[in-house]
Image (cartoon, rainbow, N blue to C red; front, side, top):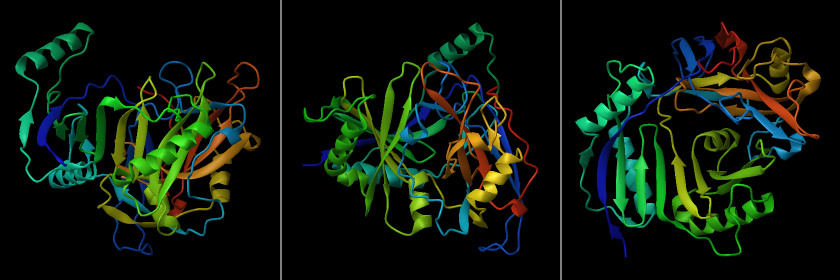
Length: 386
C-alpha cells in the first residue's frame, strides 16, 4: 500500500563563512561551433573545499594514497575515446553577495520531487503545499550570533532559498534549487548482516553493498543500464581508507555516458552504525545548452600543464611532468559553477608534502578541455579560500 504524503515548501537559510573564487577565463564565440550563436561566457567557480582536506582544516584538493592505482572510479572517459566535442551548459542558478540563490524552476523542482516520491512507493495523488519559514525570533537569534563573532547582517542576508519537501513516517524527501533530491531515512535502514556498509569498509565489502543497493533500490535508481561507481580509495589523516557509492546510467554513447557520470547520479550514504541513512539523486538543470565545443586531447592538455596553464587549489607550483601520475576528464559540477564545462584533471605527486612511511599526496591540477581558440585570459588561481 502506498503512503499518503504532504508536500511542504520550506525556506532554508545559508550562512557562509568564506568562499574561494576560481576565475577560469572567457569562452569566446565561434561561428564554426555547432548549435549556432554563442555569447562570450565569463566563467567563475566559487566552490569551496573541493576534494579532500588533507591538513585537518580547510585545505587544498589533495588525495593521500600509497600508490595512484588506489584512487579509483568508474569514470567512462578513456584517453583513447574518440570524442571531438563536448557540451557546455549555463547553470540557471545564480547567487548574490549574500549567497542567496535565484533562478530556480519551481515546476521542475516539484515534478522531480514527485517523481522520486513515486519511486519510493509514496502516494502522491493528493499533496498539500505549505510554506515553512523561520520566525522573527529565529532570524533575530542568527543575527545576534553573527554579531557576536564580529559579523554584520547585510541587506538580503535573510532572503529565502526555496526548497520543497515531502515528509512521511520514516522518510523525508527534499529537493533544493540545484535539483538535488535528498532522501533521509528515519530510522536509518539496517542492511542484512552479511553486508558491511561503513566509512572505511574494504573495496570488496563496498562492492557487495553496491550490488545489494542496486537490487534493493532499483526503482529509486531508475536507470536503463545502472553502472556502479565505487570511487575514492584515498586515506584520511588517520591512514583510514574509504570509498563512496554512486550509480549512473551507462546507456548511450560515450558523450551521453560522460554527461550521466558527471551530472545524473544517485548516491547512498551510511551512518556511524553502518546503516543506510541518506540517499541523494543529482539531476541538475542542463536545459541551457551553450553549445558543443571542440575539445583538446590529453596530450595537448599535458603540454598546457607543463607550460603553467592550469588552475588549482594546491599551494605549490606544478613540480614537473615526471610527477604526473594520472589524468581524467571531468566536469566541475559544484553548485556555484556559473557554467558547467569539461576539464582534464591531472593527479600530481607532491614532493613538498610528506607523510609517514610511503604515503604520498596527489594534488589536483585542472586544464580546461575546451579548445584554446575559444578560451582566453586564463590566470592561475592562487588556491586561496578567502
